[in-house]
View 1 (cartoon, rainbow, N blue to C red):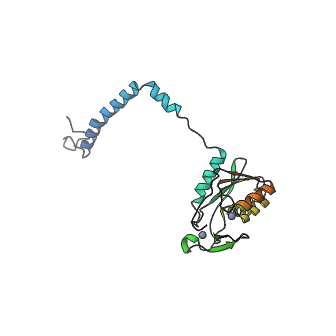
View 2 (cartoon, rainbow, N blue to C red; view 1 turned 45 degrees about the horizontal axis):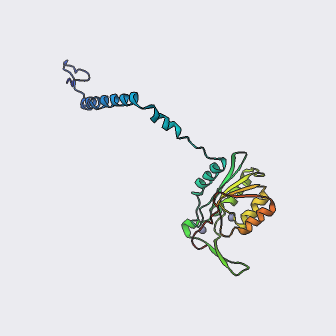
View 3 (cartoon, rainbow, N blue to C red; view 1 turned 45 degrees about the vertical axis):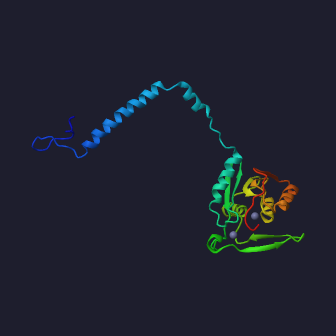
Length: 214
Ligand SMILES: [Zn+2]
Ligand SMILES: [Zn+2]
């Protein structure tokens, strides 16, 4: 094999490129591979190609699209008791978003720990809540206020049944539909308020979301 690829030097002697081994070896390997690929392409059975096209891509619904977005946004949350995200959308467009986090400039739960408060209910039962954070729904509403975006007539997507405070804000913001990924263990009061206020409440999954120390 002639391995004198490349230019000649000043004396007219053939110059041997330091890369000629690579070049030759590449050709030696590559040509048979290319021929093999052409052979398979020519002899491929049409039914194999048919099967590939039969696997139809399923586009997410609009609710799935916004819920997936809310879940992506939740990754920015700073309290591990509920890394929630929220999307408020209208006419198939996202208006504002929010996630769980401390008020601007204040330390986050992930950095200094939770700020727990125990709540005693009328029936004597107690629940524990971290009160350090602004909830995802509240932050989305705050974003609308900061940017001057009306959320009247919109749909809100969130991780679980909004708490009592969020529910009251949602009602007064003019949101007409709430879609939750799952149920909040203490969400009954919000459910009743939404019903009275005429707000549509839907769950992707009816199961109650569980977490530590609830
Ligand atoms: Zn916390
Ligand atoms: Zn809330």
